[in-house]
Image 1 (tube, one colour):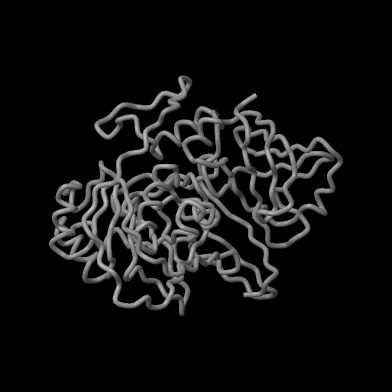
Image 2: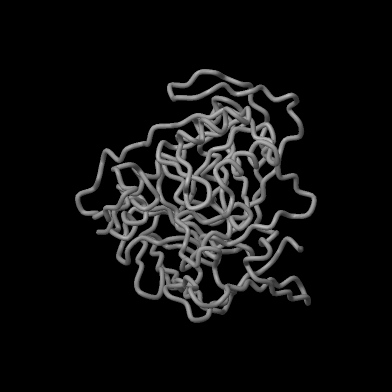
Length: 379
């Protein structure tokens, strides 16, 4: 695909820009050739990020319960993981031709990694102490289980940046994400799931939170996970939950059997819904970034003297509560940080600058993804 490209995101029957009843389709224009494809079938190649992983020497230090990890027979080829962006939380990712996707010999963190919060980071940290860290994610879960699609907390094109920010915690190795089709493991018993990890994927060890459940209908708990991993000769490290010590009084978290006060993606979503960006930052361990694709020139992007506005249909991940947010930063392709105020209403997102800004100069590239980083809460 040519390096200069334009994207327009066409949505139909959508609620606040997140499609519930109809497929999201991207239209990519390259000269005179136009191809359309479902976002669930192909990644947008020109904006794909690749994550390369280097081998890490084994360390036995850990304060968590574990059984021994086996040393790999050989380092092997460094795996490459592809990523793409999507508005739907469970959109499928299809590797590019020629990409090597493997977790063989690696240490795999198990869970549902939506928000990539500090609890998920702790799993990656513990995995990195024993070898090359991976996060094992399941794709297509919403489709299989009949869940309504919802926006991800972290845009898919932003996950690589988050993983890279974790490298300083993980022995200077950024964790990689490995995806498995949920339909391929849904009916596996706990034993069959661990057997798949050991024999088919070739992992050397797993890391999981103390509340992790697995297998068909969540039949297995961490006690069974440790027992089965020992039986199949792979390591198991069970990590205590990272507790939410802040628990913002303005945010109400629904109580259920899984809610024990730990940091969770559910808490992050409720904090965003309440517009408490300080609380969101504490749960994530970083500032929240809202990403969107600018519409085609002459389409629905409105430019004023000190303001640009875009429809919510351009959003790639979950927004905070409608309102006005000061002390934000605008980033174009993750560069050119510009102080701004962000105003979100029922249909649009508005970016306001205090100074005289030439939006034509700031937004000069044809292929661009815009980020807004939130520093404070509503006000």
